[in-house]
Image 1 (cartoon, rainbow, N blue to C red):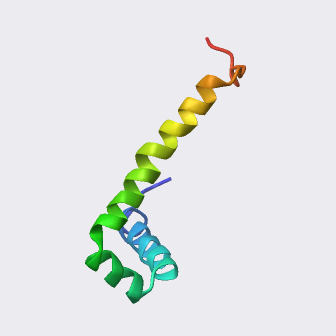
Image 2: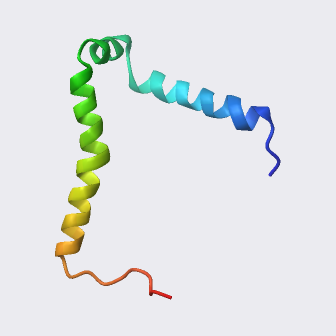
Length: 70
């Protein structure tokens, strides 16, 4: 597929704007500006602690490999 300025630049920016617009209101944005620590704790929890917890749970269970190793 050929990439042009529409698909490489405007489409991702437009999609991000639509997703943020549907998920956040101005009150939510103001709350993040006023309480940035709460938003940072939530992001760190989602990005660091949840994957780590999932890895620990999966390593403690006797699971078989989903794909055979080559």
